[in-house]
Every structure is written in C-alpha cells, then in structure tokens.
Length: 269
Length: 288
Image 1 (cartoon, one colour):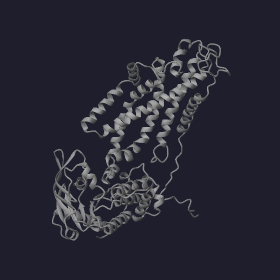
Image 2 (tube, each protein chain N blue to C red):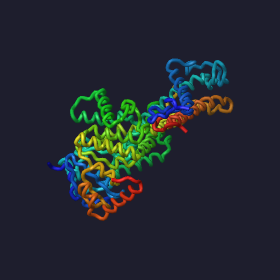
Image 3 (spheres, rainbow over the protein chains, first blue to last red):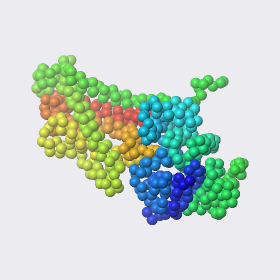
Image 4 (cartoon, each protein chain N blue to C red):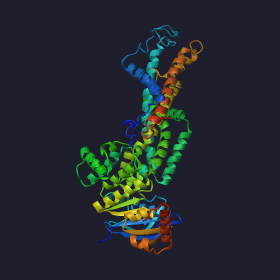
C-alpha cells in the first residue's frame, strides 16, 4: 500500500534563516507517528507546511506528497480540497482555536454542513443538528444539547478540546494531525483526551501525526517516533526501538530527562 | 451544613447573566426620545412648521414650548422636525460610511503587502483632512445642497475612519488560531469572512458606528449652519442655530433650544456606544 503522506527532503526557510532542514518521513494509512522535539525544533512548522498553511514570510522546499497531491507550491484551491476530507488538525490551545463569538453547536455545524455538501447530501438544519449532537456524544461530552448552546469561554478546557476533536472528526479525515493536543490541559484531563484520541483513531482507522515534546505522552499514543532537533530529523523508528535503544545522543538526553522527571514524580513509563 | 444543588457552582455556566450597563439605558432613553420625536413629525406636529402662529421672538410658553422665531413660527415644531432630519442624515451617513468603510477595510486586510500599504496610506491621508471639510468639498462639487447630498458627503467623509478601523480589526482576527482552524477544516476565504471575521469585529465596529452616528448628526448641523445642508423648508438644527444667531442677545432661547437638542442627541449616542461596548461582546462576562 502506498503511503498516505510522504515528506521528502523538505526544508522551511524564513528569509535567510533555515528553520527546518531536509526532513524526510512518511506515514502509511492508519499508521500513528509521533513527532518529538523541544519547542522551536520545527515540529509545528512541519505540520503547518504539510497542510499548506505556512505564513507568507516562510517558504517550504522539497516535496510533500499528501494523498498523491504535491502540497509544496500547490494552489489554494487544491489545498482546500485536501483540508477536511484528507487531513484535519487539533490544535494546542483549544480556547483560541474556537471562534469566541460562535456557539459550540454552530461551530461544529459549519463543518458538518460543509462535509454534507461535499458528499452531495442534502442538508436540513435538523440533520445537521442531529449530526452535531451525535459527534458531541462521540467525544464523550455529557449533556450534548446543553453544551451545543454554550460559547467556548463558558466550557472547560477539556471540553473545548473535545469540541475541537469533534470538529476534526466531522470530516472523518484520513490523517489526523494533533499538535500538542494535551499541553494546555491538566494531567487527568490529558489522560482522558489521549485515550479519546487513541480510541477514535482506531475506530475510524485514521492515520495520526502526533506532535509533542512530552515523550511519555507520545509513547502512549503512537507506533512510530520521529525526533526533530533544531530543524533536523535525528531519529525515526518504532516506539520500542527509539525509547529502548536511541541512536542519537539528543534522543538519549530527551529520554533521560523524561525518566528523571518521572522518577521525581514517582511514575514510570 | 450541606450544600443544596442550587448552591453548587455549575461546572459549565451556560448562561451568564449580564448586567445592562447604565450608559446603555440612559443613552438608549435619550436616543429613543429623539427617535420618537422624529417619527412623530411624520404623522403630526404641534403646529404647521411654516405657519406664523405666534408673536415674533416670543418667550417659551405653554402654547409655544420653545418660543417662536423671528417670523413667529413655532420653534418646538421645528426642533422636532430637526430631530427627524438629524436621525435621517445620521443613519444614512453611517450606512454609506459603513458600506464603503467595511468593504475597503476588509479588502485592504486581505490585499498583498504593497497594496495594503497603499490602502493604509490612503486611509491615513483621508483621515488627516477634517471630516467637515471633505463633506463641504463634496457638497460644493455636486453643486446641489439637498438632504441626499448631505448624507452622501458625510458618509463618504466618515468612511476612511471606519475603513482604517476595519482593516486593523480584520487583520487581528485573521491572525487568530480559529481562522487557521477554519482553514484547516476546508473553509474558503469568503465563508471565513462572513462566518468568522465579520461577527468577531462587529462588537468593536458597532461601538464605533454609534459614535460615527453622533458625529454625523453634528456634521449635518454644521453643514446646515453653513447653508450647505438640507435647503430651507427642512428645519435642520444647524439652520435654526444660524437663524437665531442675529437675535441671540435679545432672544437667547432660539439658540439654546436647538443647541440643547443637538447636544443631547450626541451625548445620547456616545452613551449608547459606551454601553454597547460592554454589552455587545458575549465573552465579556460582566461590566466592571
């Protein structure tokens, strides 16, 4: 089976500065890849580049093949066709990723309606509403009807992230990008959201690109791990390989740091 | 002591009750009063506005609440009609200004960097000219002084400030994560503008439009005072002020009454704008 996403020697530059250098990796359909690195290592830039959303000041070179479409240099029209059916994203900070002045239900409804139009299904507002409630129930939100009427600032961080996941899920994308989806949440909520993402990815048979700086979190969510250091890929292998026998000194130090931190907290991974 | 369910704070407060700010109430009352007066004149006025019904330059009395002018016409009637004209010009000018300003401002925010710079510079240059001067130029250029040209002139003259504000607001919203999220979810730019951008800049914009309304009413009076507003049978406050100028020492009320009407409308609009500021944005839980 051919890969869903193939990144080949991709570099991202802002003017003279190289932010990401010669990164290559691929994701097969249904595969779960973790992208690890410190802040500033280029993880999120890589994610933005592969959906064609780098800011105008930045330039990507090389090749990004997403569902047989070349993203580097693609027209906005081609990209819009990819966003949704092929790839959806969950962001780090769910409060800013939701429109503050739109009720949650309508926000999900916008995506549902677009999906229905895309699939050439007739859209009545009752159908949209029913699908919104179904999605909210799917992401384990109690009392979906009440929540659908709330504004994003009126609900908790964990619930906001669930809403964001519901919006991503509305498309049933082939690749789900989760950009530090648990970083802004407290530890217990983190575990719930991770479990939810894992469960949905499996049920919907989506591929997952999980971006995080938190090794234990990544290890729990993915099959394969790639490590970015200052814009360069220094490691790529299965979770077991990389965590048990890291090739690179940087990866070793990352894992060691996580272990030390865990010992201090008294938990093990 | 046990907590009853009613005492337990809800984890998700769905409806946060907002206190209606005092300025919104007072401003709304004042503007509402002007509005009522304006609408009333369409159906009924105390006297014929052009009929000479009393002595010349009469003091305020029961029969003539604001006295009479130097031709013996009832001033109160003319002030009521003036309210209608001020509101007509105000709303018309704000509509024209908002139409031009919001469109140009949004276009500028989406334009390429060079074009955006050109837009921004153009807005700034236009704003550097006093609104009234621009409005006077437009009226003079059109060579007709009518209610319609006044609306158009004041609207166009005020549009630059709305355009500049819109451009900045749109740019700020466009940099938000939820716009990226909407793009990731496959929204096209036009739908992002109407679904996310305009609703999010609206709270700030509506406040500014209310302020513009007050300024437009004042600009209308200024134009009429200079003889560039609505022509004579229309009793504009500006024209009443201008007519009362010659007799201001002998019959001061002829100037005080329309002045008071204008001042209260502008204050009312400003209070309304201030109240809307706190009220229009659902993310603001409570006004300070």
